[in-house]
Every structure is written in structure tokens, then in C-alpha cells.
Image 1 (cartoon, helix red, strand yellow):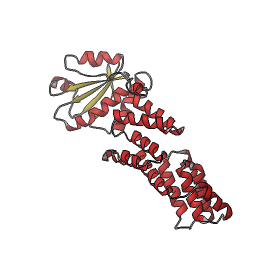
Image 2: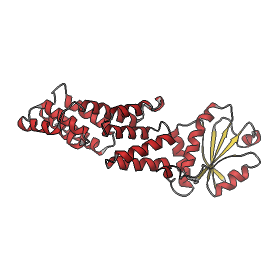
Image 3: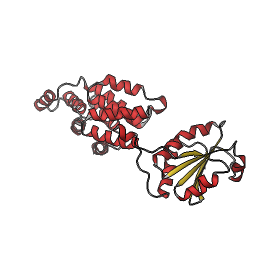
Image 4: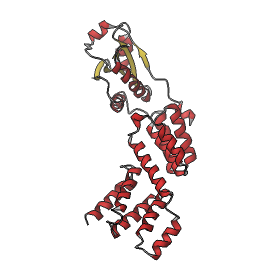
Amino acid sequence: MEGLLNSAPAPAVKDATSATFMTDVIEASRDAAIVVDFWAPWCGPCKQLAPALEKAVKDTRGKVRLVKVNIDQNPDLAQQMRIQSIPAVYAFKNGRPVDGFVGALPESQVKTFVQRLAQLAGGAASPSPIDEAMTAAKEALDAGDTGNAGAIYAQILQHEPGHPGAAAGLARCHIQNGDAKSAESVLAAVPADRANDPEIVAVKAQLDLARQAADAGDVAELMEKIAHNPADHQARFDLAMALFAKNKREAAIDELLELFRRDRKWNEEGARKQLLKFFEAMGPTDPLTVSGRRRLSSLLFS
């Protein structure tokens, strides 16, 4: 997997001047989409934009190239391009400007901007090595191979510290292995500005559920209790928690829905509240979340 992460070519980023602009931008735009970043060393937003712009260009693997123009050193070019505020970003294809923006955009919008140019240049951008590694790690985790998944997520974090998806994935590996402390350590290392990422929020909810499930009891014993007394609501609730801890999520949801059907007011709507925690931990797009919410709504309005 290390080879996968190191397989991308170096990003096509270069500096241009008034003398080289025709070659580096206008002529080069006949082979690829060229993004021109007009900036200056004193410009704070320019420094904020640059890493996101360079990363997005790198991820296109040559479909888009980045040319940087220092307006302090090239005032005539800035005047010719009518640059009034920086950062100013222009995109060129086939010798003419085709898109652009002014100001420091969020990383997600920068990525969308560059991907749109990659499509214009001849097809969608290839997935980056990080994206490919994330896909491989998720496939391993979905298959129950927490060893390989954890190793891949750890490598991603070495290449891109603080990557929320990789941190969440590694924490999930530890949770499935019953190692809550290691999961906590991984999440504690996530930068504060990424702590509200949906994947981080979801895995924190999963960690809370894992702590609760640790005291739920043995699945077989709880199932036997319910077989003898189907009205034992606490046993059914504990069974749902124990099943969820063993990654039998659908069965866990079934038990809570059955408990809600039997007595929705039990323990201050404990079944409904726990279902919502399950959905938060699984994420809003998980098929079991979607179907579980639909089934819960049917019971609520029946």
C-alpha cells in the first residue's frame, strides 16, 4: 500500500513571469487546463488558498496544471489581467480564459473548481493515491479485516496527518477489536478544526455505544431471557446493545424496533432514543440508517 500512496506524479506547479506567461499559460493550455494563481507574499488569504489549490491540482494527475504569478514582481502582467484583488484565480483552456474566482474559497469548493476543469481537459480526474487507499481500507474494514484496514488507515495518517476519514476508520478498527482506549487516542489527535467532521462525529457516537455495550451481557443468555419472557424490555434493550457491539447492526435495530412497538414509552422512550444513537453512529447515508428511520417513522405514525 505504500507504493500506492507514492505512485502519483509530482504536482505540475510552476512560477511564471511576464516573459514566460505566453508559453507557460496560453500555449500550455492547449495540452491541459491551466490554473493561474495571482498572489503576493504579504497576502494572508493567498497563503490560505495555496495548499488546497495545489492539492486539488495534484489529484488530477496532469489534467490540470498550476501556474503561480507573484504580482509584486510582475505588476505589468497583473495590470494587463486587470487584477484588482488577490488571490485571483483564472483558468485557461485552448488559449483563452474559461473560469475563475477571487478570494480564498473553502477546500471543498476549490476541489470542485479544479475537478470541473479536469473534465474540460479530457475526462474526470483520476482518484488520488489517498482516495484509492481510503477505498482499499474501507473494503478491508467492511470485510472484517481490521488488521489490513488499520494498517492502511495508519499509513494515510502518516502521509496526511489529521485526515478525518482515515482517523475515523482507524478508530473503527480499534472499536471492532475491543480496544476503546486506542480509539480514544486516535480521535484525540484529530485537529480541533476537523473535530466536527461527520465521520468523526459518527465514530465518536460509535465509541460511546461500544462503552455502553460492554456491560450489556451475553447475547445467548439475553436471547434465552426473551424467549422465556418476551415482555422483558430491559433484556431486549440489552440484547440490542450486545448485538450492535458484535457488528450485527440489523439485528440490533430489529430488537429496538420491536421494543418500541411493544412499549414506546418504556424507560422514557429509551428504544427510540437508542435507535437515533445507532443512526448517528452509522451515518445518515448508511442503508440500515435509511431503512431503520423509515421503519421507525412507520411505527411513530401508525
